[in-house]
Image 1 (cartoon, rainbow, N blue to C red):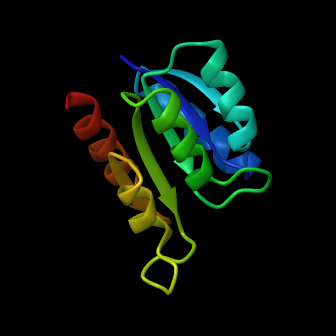
Image 2 (cartoon, helix red, strand yellow):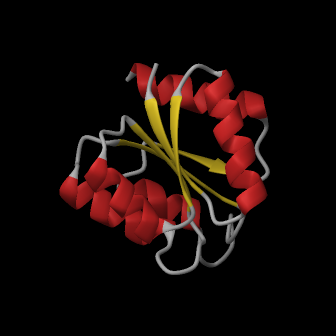
Image 3 (cartoon, helix red, strand yellow):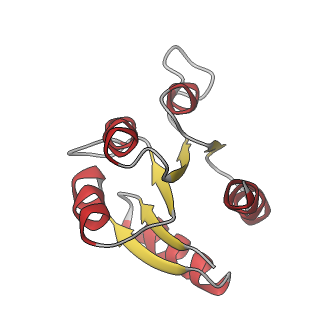
Length: 122
């Protein structure tokens, strides 16, 4: 299975997503924001970045830009509940700058699994 970096600023959601990816058979690395995620990405190999978009310190859009510059082949799934369909559509922006898939919060476990399987299978 894949080595997944999950990035989410809400500690409870971060732990829940980490447990879910582990149950699905993936190796999981956790980060609370984009700054911590970049440290993890430079320290260890990652197959899939699963990131929230609205976070303090460094948001997911900035993280995606950096990742695409430094590791253009890294697979990325972005998720957010902020600005979906509004004046600033974060999910659309994430796709435009390189996310392979996006999920609108709240998303179901089934939606997440489908997106992960689709992205990982190429």
